[in-house]
Length: 194
Image (cartoon, rainbow, N blue to C red; front, side, top):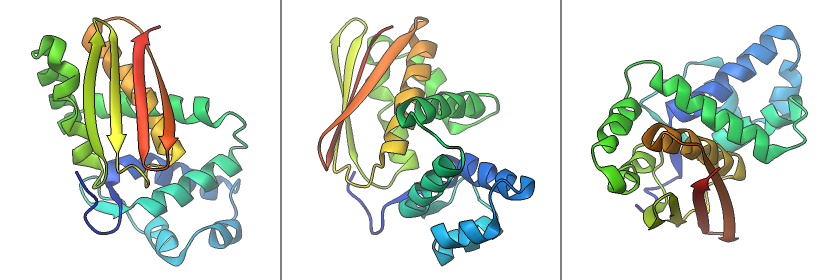
């Protein structure tokens, strides 16, 4: 899928960042003045408003929210931090009725082709990137993403964690997912047994 205008993502992708920033502001861990220095006006307007899970939001707002959250949380291992957030995001989505829950449940019926069936999921939450699935052997797979310039590392690592959790749900065994960015516009995820 090619980008349609400004790169954007669905509200439920950005919602946990928004909630965490709100919590930090309430606690006083994040000062309003700091947020105003780090974020753009439209980011602040959104922070002052409400996130609607099914609406589209600018990808760059996600990036700035993620950078600010990582800075305030004093993250030293970005990959581990965002991967864990990705795992937790899947758990949150599966805890109640959602499109993701229905897709994962439906993908189980595809057996060995479940991974390929789930390639529709990124298209539902991002308006950029071309995602493809290749099964290498029984428990080894590769997802390639072209036109991925807008896929920030925080989001890439979150997808990595989400991929681990979804693969575990589908296969019943632990899966280790790694990702790399060979070029600015290309990302590769690789899953193997843990």
